[in-house]
Image (cartoon, rainbow, N blue to C red; front, side, top):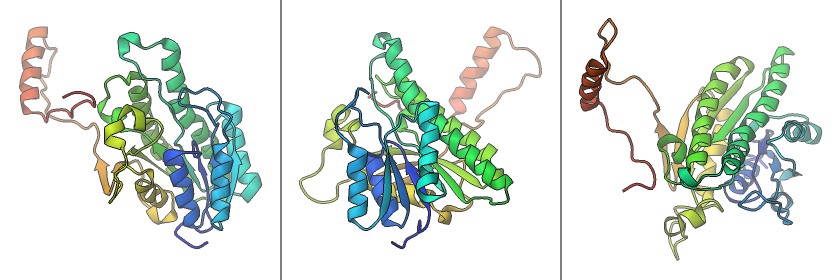
Length: 302
């Protein structure tokens, strides 16, 4: 297959269904050889007898592409290491890492169990960090050996991580952490030929089709705005050599719309040049807030 990813080797985590599956198929259609990772679990994180990674591999091969499955838990050091090893053993290289795996355990904060909090942070944030660490170590070795790669990382955040989402405290915290991790990776890994970006997608997946059933429902006819395949073209481009020079960015992707998200930066400032009293600080804050842009609404609020 030819395409903008011809010859590249791409790893996609959580690629058995939804966005990950759409990404894997889209990369393969553009000529990439794909490692399809999926643990094969239900929405609650419990084991599922289904084998979604193998099914996606079969789809790619049936279309004339190349792919292998990886069923390891990428939120463990061993699983993340074997993910990179699988790419190297199967294809001799690794060019792009797409971190996508995740699941939900939604609760209001006062009802959020510590185990559920830990599980969500583990799968989303730790599940981004460990594959990134393993891939980065490989790329650093390559660069130090004089084989500087044209490497790409695409992480998956969420509007919940950028604005917050009612009933999703753990998920929002994890997705916000992924944005910060992406910025650090872009800064630290540039010397090794690595670019890192993040997306905040809105699409119909197992995680969203129940929580936002009405919004995510497929139309009877016409453009299916919430189809996960709408997000994948941006991910494929970011994961290709064509995206040279684009790093440390966050993109919102939904339907036919792509938005560059602009994060925290200094706004109105007051400097007394000395220590404030509490009353003075309050007066200064009130004035600064009157000059500042209002924050975006948290998802789930009217």
